[in-house]
Image (cartoon, rainbow, N blue to C red; front, side, top):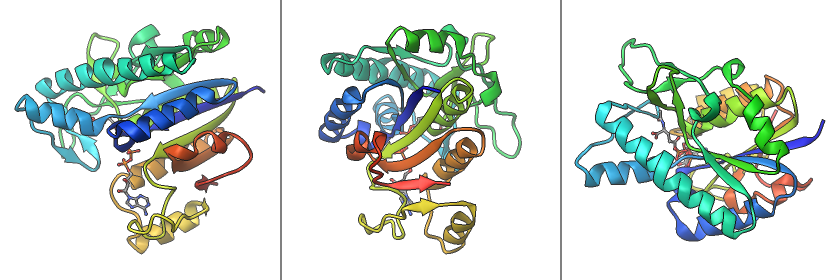
Length: 262
Ligand SMILES: Nc1ncnc2c1ncn2[C@@H]1O[C@H](COP(=O)(O)OP(=O)(O)O)[C@@H](O)[C@H]1O
Ligand SMILES: CC(=O)N[C@@H](CCC(=O)OP(=O)(O)O)C(=O)O
């Protein structure tokens, strides 16, 4: 099977113009078929603040009420997505910006209300991903760029974590391609000590993951990122890596910089 790189870039990179420009140049230079999924949580929070709409997170997921879904639709689907597409075009990458509603690629289910009402947050099942249109875009030489938005197929846009979109697309496409999933953020990988940027853990499996959790080495966003990474590697994705945005290009070759998930 032919290689496909499914690459996610996080909010701290998108929010840093120097890091972002360097990342986009390197992403554009990656040869072969590729998809980009972007976050942008920090920018949505900032613009929400400017509009008087406060952000609330529970377990790393944004509580998305009616005002917030409008903000994130504008910020992720508009501002961030189109800026990334325009920058990729200047770097010679024929990017096409999408949400999960476009071509019905990512139908989702509004998260059921249990102890917490997350509002307009969408849960995705990889088996529901509609990959026909996506494959056609890839085969036509285009590079799809996904905002972290899905839809309920009844007209409602839903906010979905970008790491989850990346793993769901990677799993769905692994039926057709040799998928290599790379999570890019502002750290060199999963770290033994979140304050020591050089303490990269080269390899994590479920056993090591549980030990690191028990030792409180892992907190915040790295926990759901690793859960998504394990879901991908356990569901047919050929390779899953977590690394620095600066290392994206070298991570598409045989030189691995960052944390490999097994
Ligand atoms: N051991 C660790 N190694 C790396 N990052 C960690 C660790 N523990 C906590 N983190 C935090 O997790 C964050 C990554 O999660 P998140 O903010 O969701 O990423 P993204 O920017 O890709 O959305 C890092 O910015 C860091 O602050
Ligand atoms: C439901 C939910 O929490 N959605 C995320 C989507 C953005 C995202 O994932 O951005 P990062 O990758 O930059 O964190 C949010 O609104 O923050």
